[in-house]
Length: 183
Image 1 (cartoon, rainbow, N blue to C red):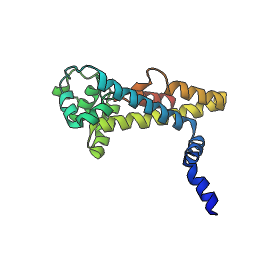
Image 2 (tube, one colour):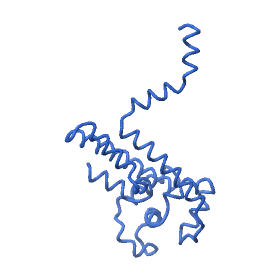
Image 3 (cartoon, helix red, strand yellow):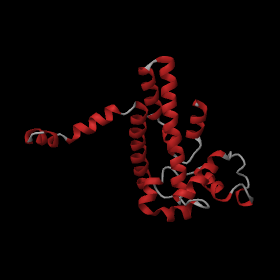
Image 4 (cartoon, helix red, strand yellow):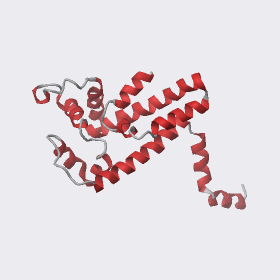
């Protein structure tokens, strides 16, 4: 390689990134781009919303995450997420009475993964994110078999960027349900 060729390659470092993105499959691109959008808007929402008093275990969780962690994870650990995290930590015992409407597969996976991560919120996010990515891949493959590649790409993009798709990486069961339904 000559010196001139090396300087041209160094002058265009973004070209390699563009080629890598083009080589990546549509479900992976849709997942990454949509989740970055959800993360950014979620963090912006958490930072600009007026603070409400968190209920039961959420107050300890917010102190554990700190201000930066709360801004990043604040949109994934709200409302019913606290029930799933509570069940993952304490089970369906007396402390969790009234939570029988929450089925055990999702909290169980959170509990197992939180042993490795040390955080129920991170474990819940990872379970949801992995399930959503796997569901997008399977949905793309299924749609491609039935309707062709263009329809599969559009289907995955529409699902990943749907207005309520932020639930797919929140600590909710939606992504796991989607994965099991598509599979």
